[in-house]
Image (cartoon, rainbow, N blue to C red):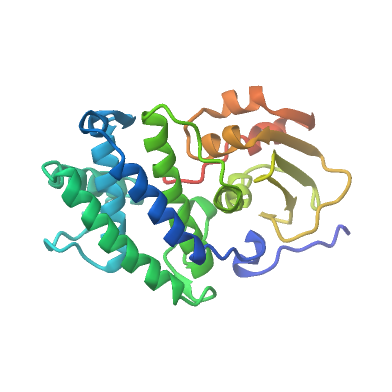
Length: 283
């Protein structure tokens, strides 16, 4: 690397495209199989703070309808004057869950199967390079469709894991899906590091260990960071962690300090601390 390094224009700093389109069908099947196997009492288990398994399934259904344009009952998500993106998302998510509180498990699963199948079909026909919805946690406004679709896949996958954890099950280790999720989550690194000062061409490596893991290298440019440069052999900092720590950190299932305590760090500790502030969901 030379000190003349410049970040590529646009979203090139986010690295190579990800094609998550073929994964939606299997992911939907896995979710439906999980929900169909629940006992009545399981639907009332707490999946995430404030939401039961039923609530979280209803939320996934709402995400599907959002992608399809509108819910059958006509509910639409509309910004209030002066509302931030985060406030809008949290408010409308809760409104939707409250509206579906009386749905029976059977009707909820049937609606999820129908809407999820249609969403998977739309994504299958999408142009990966077309402009799409922004991904705020990656600093991409708008985002290329490949990142928007991959982000949506991580949402589906993460919510299924949260349901599994509510049932006392571990993370699904299926490597193709988990690898895609982690690769998508790490596209938040340039945005995460945007306020972290470092000489041009400084590199930070993030290593996630295991069959579904990988290595990502963030390189500092004049005024931002990029994932587009090949990794060098002398990073200023390297952060290694297991897959469970990585996905929980990115979704704030654990706090940065917890992830840092579990990680193996070499090099500049301040850069490792900055890496562990990564968040790959609207938080």
